[in-house]
Image 1 (cartoon, one colour):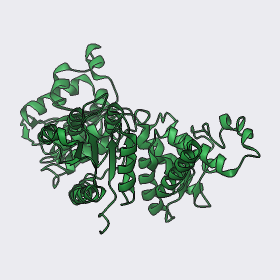
Image 2 (tube, rainbow, N blue to C red):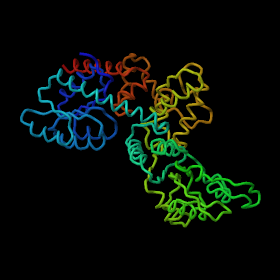
Image 3 (tube, rainbow, N blue to C red):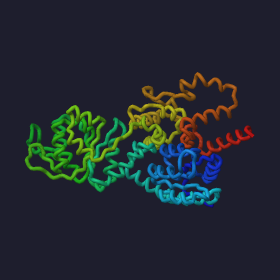
Image 4 (cartoon, rainbow, N blue to C red):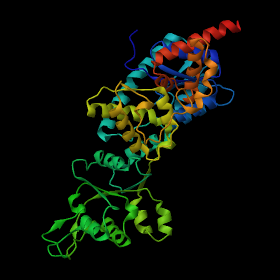
Length: 464
């Protein structure tokens, strides 16, 4: 039997631990990446935290019904294939599961050849979805929007919903979270993609200059106004105008902006005749606008007009699981820019990154990796490559202050014991995610899987 096009991420949920392990092992041998949960609740929690291509769930479990798993999976992982495992007496329930969105059901005892064939067949559909998403990612120009966390998946869901429309969108988030990237993504995936995308920072100019920038002026409208000048709204006609730091716009200009949004007309400074414009406005701010409204610094009617759609970008400390994929993405791009090979990142560095709060968010992560890559001389990013003013510090494992005092108890112990200890710590830090743990340890995921299986066999021999 030929190998599937690409390995799938498979979640196996069954309170029969031996059956779950047998299924996982059978699919692992086909090259798939399997995660096992031996309770329904743990399975639901796992599929809410991570992305999977295929979910295999038993229908009858002690704590949660397989039907509940199917329902939840359809909500949080709409693209995943869901297979239910059932006994002969539960075929009717399996049919109900398929009505809820399950793709197939398998009867016990499981025929591994049938299971592999069914999963491999689903790989073709998954491959098509992956290809489409890659095209979408290229189209969006994702950078800071990379991430598999639930909060970032929600952002992407909203982007796909808002992009094809003409709705104005308010993007909220701390500095460095990627608000302009979201605005560009909305534009690039809209019918306006071939028209201008115009960006301006409302906090960078005083009131008079901001007025001129937005609406333009006529010749002689004020001292120094030589010649006629179009404003940003006119330049963006047919396209998208991104108003960054909208929370800092003076109240007088807020009134003029509201009029443009309501009537689709601008009036240049010094003119009487309005000019019709067709512009989609995307605004962004790091301020709490409802509080600004309450304090009288922001117009409530403008707030409601801007927030037809709202996208709230999570800060990086709220989605720490996205740090490794984000870092890998940035390193690939930065290495190409600097003409260097993509470096390895020491496991301890990844751990320190995941435990750091990133006050500068995605921008800080990218800039720090840029500095480390420039300083690196051996093809591996370690703490030696950190700039002196970096906020990141070693955390909890070899090379870190908390580990140094307690590492002496390994002196004189077999290397295998030390290796197993840190492997288990990596799995603990990643909550059992073998892919992330392998990345931390600097080994192939298949190598990690083999080690785990070897340790299991040793444990079984001891128990026997």
